[in-house]
Image 1: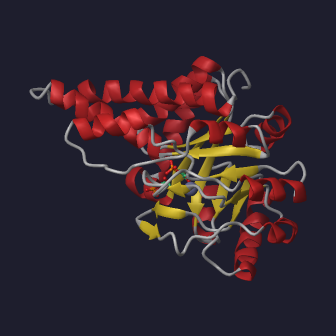
Image 2 (image 1 turned 135 degrees about the vertical axis):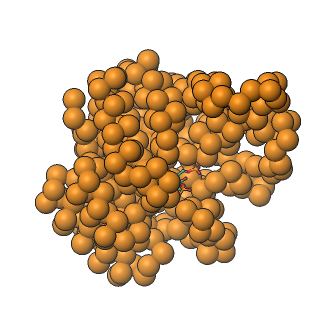
Length: 309
Ligand code: G3H
Ligand code: 13P
Ligand code: ZN
C-alpha cells in the first residue's frame, strides 16, 4: 500500500465519532513503536514530521523509515508536514513525497494567513496532497519558538467560514486552550468546547484538528522526576477532554510530548537500574516498547480509532 492522504480517514472519523492520532516522528525507534502499536490494533495513522525533525533526521531518512513501516504493517499511513511555516518548506515536502502538509500561518494577519495558505493549497492540490491550515494561536514551545500565554489567542469562530472558503484547505487546526509542550496549564485544565462547537456548527462535516493534545501523563513525569529529571508543574490535557473532542468534529489529534516523556522516562529508569550498560540497543529497546504501549493506549482509550484501518 502506498502512502495515503487523510481525506478518507477524516471522512470516516467524522461520521464514526472518533479521531485519528497524528504522532510526531524523529527517528527509527519512534516510527517503529508507533506503527507496531497501530498494526496490533488495526488503526489508521498519521505520522507527522516537523521542520525540526526534518533537520535532525533528514527528509530522505524519514521517508524511507515510513515506507519501511508501510511495508511491514500494510497500514494506511498518511505522512504529514507538521507546522510548515513557508511555501518553500511545504513545496519541498510535497515534491519529496509527503501526502499532507500543514501551513501554519497563524502568526500572520488574517489576510496574510489566507494568502499564504491559498498559495500552498493550490500547489498541494495540483499534486494530490491535502492541506491543514490554522486559525488562532496556541501557546507553548514549538521548534524552539516559545509563544507566551499573552501572545496566544483562541480561534474566532466568525472567521472560519471565510478562511476555509477563500483558502480551500482540507482541514483546520483551531486554538481552544491546548498548548504545545509539557506545561500546558498553570491551574485547572480548561478547554473552550464552546468555540469548538461553534466552529463545527459553522463548518458542517469539516474536519477539525487539535494541536497540543498530549496528556503529559503524570506517571511518566513522576518517573522522570524520580530518576534525576526536573519537571515540576508539568501538566497536560486530561484524557476525558480528549475523548470528548474525538467524538466531535475533531478528526486529528496531535501527540508529540507524551512520546518524548515515554522515551525519556524509560531511558532514565533504565540507566538508574543498569548504570554499567552502554549499548544503545539495550536502552532504546524498552524505550520503543514504551512508545508502543503509550500509542496503543491512546488509540483504544482516547482516539477510538482501533479497528478502523
Ligand atoms: O508542535 C510541535 C511538535 O511537538 C514538534 O516539535 O518542532 O520540536 O520537533 P519540534
Ligand atoms: P504536544 O506538545 O501536546 O504533544 O502537541 C504536539 C503537536 O501539536 C504537534 O503539532
Ligand atoms: Zn502543533
